[in-house]
Length: 213
Image (cartoon, rainbow, N blue to C red; front, side):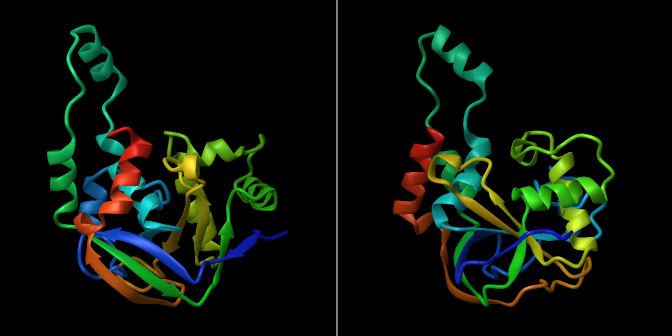
């Protein structure tokens, strides 16, 4: 048995820190911060995060700005309005770029497909079934383990639902670096359009509605 693979769309999208949408984040910064959902547990390679639309990208990037439940409950109890997030969003997006990238529609692992989940269970000697929600949960150990297993099997990346953009059926494409430090993805990618993220007002407004910020 092998992982079930699905093709990348011809166009994929990314919001990146720099103007190069194909660049991977510096390893030291990745290790110092909170890991991404599809980062290898031991950082033996880096993962580039792409999505099916800029709306999905914005939702993923800005999700942490959504007020936590304790803050919301306290403000409601005091009769105070929720904080205005305009400044925080502007600061978050000022150094970022929104990009459209052309692919050759290479195949990557569709990790939530039943065949892929069974393959992951077998390769990791699990005694219980992995559910789709396990890959989208707050606990990142299972998706990070899946990324490492798929990479070690020679796969180019993982296709999965967006944990934050389920309302619009958002998808993410998480593309592996060949080896740490190489800066090379296992799929062919060509930058097509690169613009300031803050200037993408329509997609940003839609994402803010979805996040309630």
